[in-house]
Amino acid sequence: MLRVGLMLLSALAAERGMAEPVFSFGATPGQLPKAVVPIHYALDITPDLDKLTFSGSESVIEVSEPTERLVLNAVDMTIAAAAIEGEARPQITSDAAAQTVTFAFPHPIAAGRHQLRISFTGQINRFGRGLFVVDYPTADGRKRMISSHLEPADARRIFPSWDEPAFKASIALTVTVPQPFLAVSNMPVAREEPVGDGTKRVAFQPTPRMSTYLFVLAAGDLERVTADADGITVGVVATRGKVEHGRYALDTAVALLRYYNEYFGIAYPCPSST
Image (cartoon, rainbow, N blue to C red; front, side, top):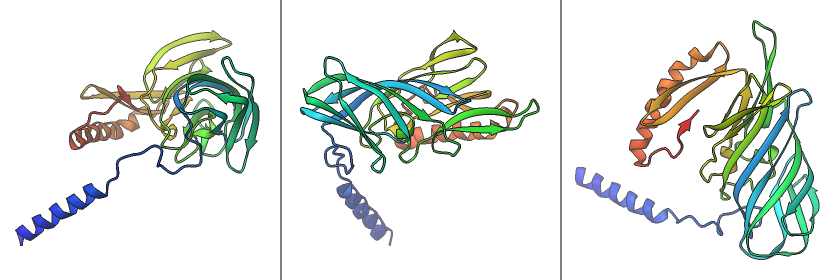
């Protein structure tokens, strides 16, 4: 009986191994054309917590074959300008139903790396998609914070992007927030500097190449408690005065990270996890 069971497990493992196709970017289903791919997003976002709007940003792209059209995802966004260095300004067309924006150039963009600069404005939502606002009571009165929720396909509500999982790029975020705020993203803070009018600019280290739905931004009157897990800083963030309620979650996250590192045989790729 044991021998039969082992044979069955071996057969299932072999079948599973054969059934696992090698990842192919070109063969992965999606709605966006694959002639142009993002390499790096350099985001500079300035939220306005009173008007519930924000503005940003810039990307670097690679054109694998000459094309006259760049098609990205964007929702509830106004594109003020778009440009590729050394090229004529494109015609900008939005398709709300398809959740896309198209930049049509007067002649094909040559294959190779180009810097695409996009200026845009968007909305901070009162519902939990894209970048959204949370108002909450405290002993000192009501306070406001912002956070993001992008799964499965709402990064397009924060910045024009190739918002399909097959498209992966690094992301370097700079955000301008009120001076007392703690800003949190996927990576540790690289630098922070005051800019006047009671605000500061917080720049984060670039992420590894990743899908856009993994991008995170939160900012408010927050506190963080951290612990070390084999050289990785694990953190839990809460509104001020409630961070100690996150101790159990922190201890659990540390244990889980160590378990997954051992289980998969692959170390967590970022210097921190919050």
